[in-house]
Length: 355
Image (cartoon, rainbow, N blue to C red; front, side):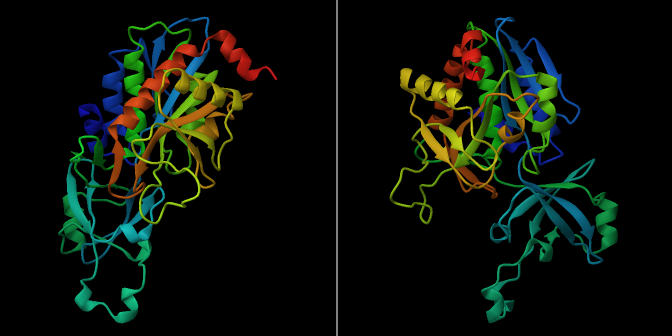
């Protein structure tokens, strides 16, 4: 998946999404008749089908969880704050890239060697506020001379790799470059196909810090129906299985969200997604989560309301430096999105909103 590799290796945390935005612009220009932006930086490619049909929004988000420089110590270390939800325990000794206006610097999140830890410290989880990043400087003047400033973004480092099963992908930023990939690939699948609507495929900014781009992008797209493309937690690893109900797992198909903390989907659209998957023999999984939310939480509240559903792929180790996903889950997500889009004609749209 060379496009997914390109997307994941781009360095774009919340508020600093330009590298991913440029990739999406380049890819969407090949299939879209027009590229749209909102004033926060979200991007959408317009793919015309039937102009009399509904306006269908395929919405991913471009940002990955990362950090921002908040201070420089007199000894040349960087203090930082998270951009997005991090568990403090996964950070120590991890490599990061500090991005300045003119250059990128590799750093490491500092940690004490075990030889220096007191017994009580070995049991303590250090909070982010006590951590620092070491970029090899020896003074505050070193850091300033190199051009590193407060406000510079910081992103994790992790190469893209296909695992020995030739299906599992290891990379950073799968949340949510998978969604960006699905938006682009679905638009490409529709390039030579008839579809009874106008499709707007793209991605929002700043999802990880409060669904911010999702609040503004509907004003650029003006959707009738929205399909949010995101990822979900794969609960197939030790410590995550409950044992008494089916839970999301890799290689079991796309996730269809029935509930999260930000939205209960339009049930008629939900049922249409399930029927589409079953009609075309596309495996799928049901996701129900009581914590967290997606851009759907904002988009479905646009104006009078927009029938909205979330479709995505499960991943392991979300919101860390590295995640795992299944290529077949991603491919089946694109198939489901393509077939679903083809069914969203005027009559179907009306059936979603006539109560």
